[in-house]
Image (cartoon, rainbow, N blue to C red; front, top):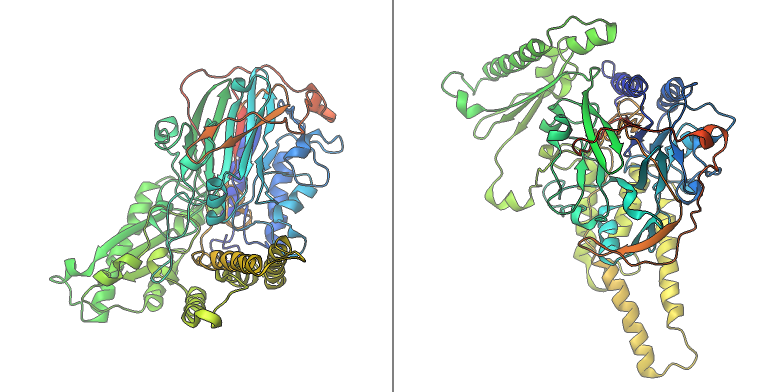
Length: 615
């Protein structure tokens, strides 16, 4: 994240490396990333190179891998070789990394490849959780075993929230479970979705989100990516049980601040998750390479008696005092002497944001004001954020602020791209009737143009959307095709097609998911750190540290999930085979006995790359 920034350019890389150093220091069994390893869908060569260097430095070595995958990896992994990287006899992997994709680094463009596909081909990452058929989504676990502990690892890479929600409602998602000793497996799921409803400013529909109640109730712990706010700082005591389901949710957040909001100002941590049989606990480990960040809200009305707020110079003096006070507070909170040049620069140039309610008063030029702090903070150009109370008629359009994701700061309202999309949507809706879009659904066109073509530079996005719509329409026509249709049957067929087109066109429009200056708490090796999310802003990537797992038989049964939870319906076993001992290289010899703490349960997700270890 911000890899080209003159001051913050190395922040994400530094934290990303710290996470992997911690993983080896604690001798974890695996690192789990919850999406957005990179902040850009097409990360720069520099970001990709540095991400690969960090993983090569810390993931390759002579330390023995003590976990064993006993299911068929081909059911879950997506590369050509379909095997976990540490079982390849041509590589000496000491720290396996398992990752799903997020909304920033999802598959796109020619071939539908993601940046993770490159890391997987280089044998540095085990990429899982990708869905190719949205009409029949099968969550097939990677069964991991260590000693007596058994872990079923489920992954679901980012899918548009509206689409995924519909899949849950239509019961188009099935969950594979171990056929034997089902109750002995500890079920861990990794997702990358909105956790709360959000909007993007006036005039936009609220974005969809996934309810905890929609996820499979058979899970023990869910590691939730995409959200930036770190909710594991208190360790086990900070992880409440889900109020909507039977599992606990671990939300590691981003490893570096990718947006200047309150959620990002909280301390960043990585989680070490330890599992022994059905018991688990989380240890929260603070990250020390994160740049200090402070945020404050003030109302100009509160200072009207002390300052002449009609004078720009007097207003700037007031704001300067407030910013200097924030800087002094940060230095008081970090009194230790920096031991490295990078640490010294982080302490010298903190992140500061002053949000000013100027209702009833004038503002000043934020850029000119920032020049006063060029040598004091890392973000002089966006120190100030002026905002005012919304009028009552605008209240219903203002987005709800229930957490921090990688979306742009909500207080600032829609940007130019969002405004253009809104104008196009309004124009199409105003046409209506025969002049409106009928063959192309508006929401599909929005996604193809603004999300894929503009946001992800996918040159073939519009053509792909048109071809897909054309194919579905042709299939609908062929389904009703008959040489001997009566007049009434023909009318019924035409009505069916009209209903299908109408249903597609009335789907709520969604705001573009492009260009957030924020990284979804993904560990970005891109310029951010942590989960090596985007190789740019480390954030949501979860490093579940210290997860010990022992897996048994690899045979799987399927059961369907209803909307509220799991309703098991035993079905045909999946293609997974009992692969215990099938691994190549050192895979077959793993399975050392594990001693795990039997104390409390907890979930820990380490944004940016925590490790999982058997205690």
